[in-house]
Length: 156
Picture (cartoon, one colour):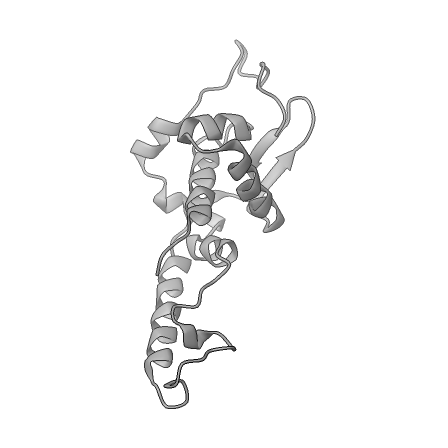
């Protein structure tokens, strides 16, 4: 199975937000940090918001934050909701043209493997994949002398 770049970026956004849970982050800063197209990241973030993983605050002083605590976000759930095609082989699709579909047992074996893959990832919370190195690399201290979140970066 291959995870798409879209899902890879979604996981990076979530890791960044978990590393900076003390403040709101912007798409612009995440885009710059990971050297990813801002336009592409906007699509990823919008899907994360629609799926309830991220909360977007609009307006001056707005930004992004996790919609729920990192321990409550399962990696398997993120991948399942971000991926558009989980068909490992053609026969997973209803319009399969494979001649072997009627008698082949491969589909069942692969379906079981995919189920085990997600069962494993469903046991992994976002907080578990956030190691000390990632936290240190992605952590951005609060701006302002009194620990406020004011500064030039605002909005989504």
